[in-house]
Image 1 (cartoon, helix red, strand yellow):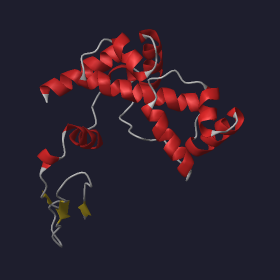
Image 2 (cartoon, helix red, strand yellow):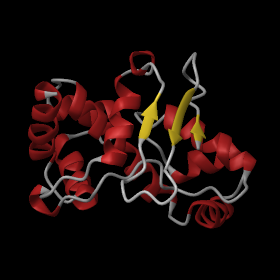
Image 3 (cartoon, one colour):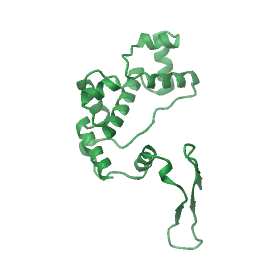
Image 4 (cartoon, one colour):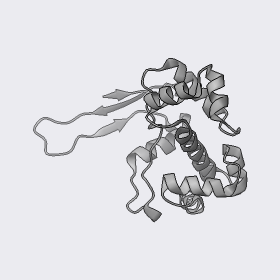
Length: 182
């Protein structure tokens, strides 16, 4: 089995060499240079490999980029544009105007392509951005709320707790402690 990371300058090869008739588990040998991939890649791999034995506050397990896009190339570029403009105040009329569609057509096409409403998707992306900022920075909640487009800390807290299952403060405490310790 081989896997490669297009962002890395060298490819990663993982070889599984089970012995025929052996009762020992297969051995894995990784011939990669992990320093070239960075902290973000290491975090992604850690989320795939490690499951916390107990998550505080009923917190959901790690989910990254779980939103499907059903073969809509125009909508794919629109989603990329939306990710770049999450910090701005967004309205359905303004978004529909950006795509030169009626509001109803945007809602229908968006739900068909992603399986959720426009603002459910936007709020989900904003919470994902807030999670990254909570893990990697020391900004106050009000600053993070403004940076990701929620406007005020209360709106961030409400959406964060609804989606993640824990408060933003306890999320920060858990994951900043893990980052500092690691």
